[in-house]
Structures are given as C-alpha cells and as structure tokens.
Length: 424
Image (cartoon, rainbow, N blue to C red; front, side, top):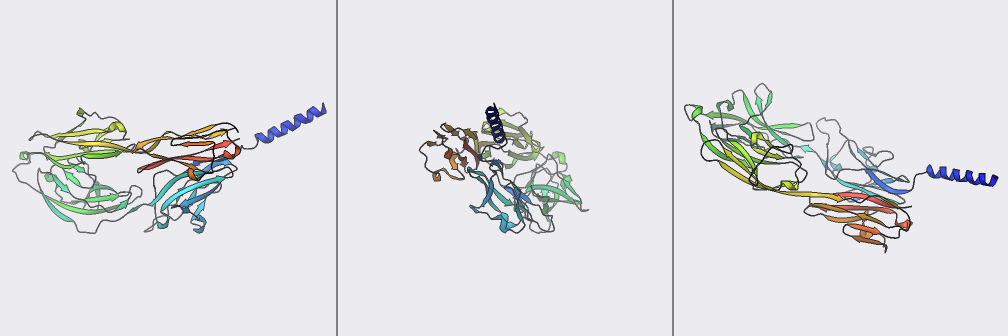
C-alpha cells in the first residue's frame, strides 16, 4: 500500500512539473516591421524630436535573443551611445533623435537553441520637403470664356509632396480653391475650364502650396496675378467647344490594392459635362468607383484585376462636336500569398509538409529560407524533399527542429512568412 502511494505521489509531482513548464520550441515572429518602406523625421528648425521604432518580437522556449542586420551587415546598435536602444525582453529598436545616418534596410533575427526566425526586411527612409525656388509673383493675362492654365513647379520631397492651389489674400489670409471650373492635375497645374471676370486678382493672388503627407509642414510658391480680358460685349456671347487640357496617358498601369485616378480634363464655354464608360458600357458610381473633380476624373479604390479594360470619357457642352478620349488600364501586383506555410509540431517518425503558393503580376519567384539563410546553405538532409512551392520532411528526427521561411518576390515587392517544425 505504501509503495503504491509513493508511486502515485511521484507521478503527481512529475505531472505538475511538466504542466508548469513551456514546451521547448523554435522562435516565432509575432511582431515585425511592414514590408513597405517607413518614414522617419530628422529634427530641424527647432522641431521636437520624433523617435521611431522598428518592431521585432518573437515567442519561443527558451526565450529568444535578438540581433539586427542593416544594409546586409550586422548592426551593432549599442555603438550609437544612448540614441538607440532595444526594448527589454523584445527585439524592438527605439531610435531617439533620428539622423540621416539612420536611413537603410533593417531586418531582425530571433534565435534560440532550436532555430532562427527571420522578420520582414524594411527600408527606413527620411521624410523631407524642400522649398520652392524664391521668385517674385508673375502677372498673366487670359481671355474671358477661354480655357487657361496656371503652372506649378513644386519642390522635391519624399514622399511626393501633395500639391494644391490656394487663394492668398493681401491681408495674409488663405482660402482653398473649390470650383467646378478649376481642376488640379497630378503634376500640380491648375486648369480653368473657362475664365470669368471673377477670376481676376484684385485683392488676392493665386499660389501653389506643397505639403508633406507625413509631416505637419507646407511650403508656398509660384504666386500669380491674373488679369481677365473681355473680347465680347457680353460674357453670355462667349461660346467655345470642348478643348482637351490634361488627360491620363493612353496606356496606364495601376497597382492592385491601391488607388488610381484617371483624368479627362476638358475646357470650354459653357462648362463641358463628362460621361465615363468602361469597354463601351456606361459606368455607374459605387462605393469603390467614383467620379472626382466634378466628373473630370474617375477614381478606382482598391484596384483589382477585374478593373482591367478600356475607359472612355465623352465630353460635350452643346457647342460643336462632342469629344472623347480612351485610356487602357492594365493592373500589376506585388506578390501576395494564396497558400501560406504554417507552424507544425510533430513527433519523431512523422512526416510534415510546408506549402507556399503566391500570386502577383509579374509572377513572383519563390525562395525558401532555413534558420535565417537561403535553403541551399542548410545541412544536407536526404529525408527532405524540396520543390518550388513545398517542402516535405519524412521520418522526422529531433535534429529536424528548425525555422523555415517562404519569400515570394517580384520587382514590385515581396511577402514573407517564417514558420517552424518542432519535433517533440
């Protein structure tokens, strides 16, 4: 009886020890940078410091250690005094007082005795907005009723500056332009469908403004004084048929998942009206497809392959013949997974399979990673079969425990998934 009781107590103790201990496993990335580039700001002109973070965190037992690579070389962040630090228990880097030297490609590796997990690789780029060239306001003249163009030469910047035209009053106040007769093209130029006497600059100037999408900053330049000249006894006598001003190129390319705007800007008096068709069929507005700029542009949100086709704008104002213009839209795509590999826990002697399938346009190339390095550098394993979209490991052994990653790449970008096989 005492012997049975002793065995029972030992079993209870072993069970409690087992339940209270994490199962050993390779690292698994749970937080990581995005695949697209990330902006950071460098302090200037008394701005406040804006630190940025590059995330990296992984689970695993034992808890993984972290290391970073920048531009393909080991990144010893400790050498940067107190400006760069790594969050305790995580791999996330905190970069205070960002500087130009922080620009580069970063990647995180989480490692323990069972494997090495690899994060996405992210490019950190400095956000900046330059100034307009300093120049005095220019004076221009235009004929009442006729189309007209104001040119803007925006400063360089990254990301590409957002350009708008504004009215700058002599008392220093500013006003946004919102008129069915005035349309901004993607290059920053302002097109008047037709000029009216009200467009003359009496107590104001037209000005081009450039703002940064990522910084609370704007610059103003290209100030214009505009004089409107009458050529008829009455404005009602001005009649001009539709005249092409700015259109999207005939062969346009859109990126899947992004937004595209097709432009068809025509001037004339009366104000021309625009009708849009796709492959000859009248286009109806929806949550995803809308008209902008009072019909002078067509906006497609979250572009997909179904949006490929010929888009035609028909423009008329009752004077002369109607005009039309066609744009052939092609859709390209960064890679995206259609089948992702998954983490697997398995017993010795079993078989596991990793599958990785991706689509994109152009078709992506798939490459496999083993413990942070290309698979061709992995130890030879006769029980492992590798093909383009799958890895099969038969008759598992303890030493097969490792991290595997799938990377699908084309010239537009990449997707990456890091997983593991854990042989228990």
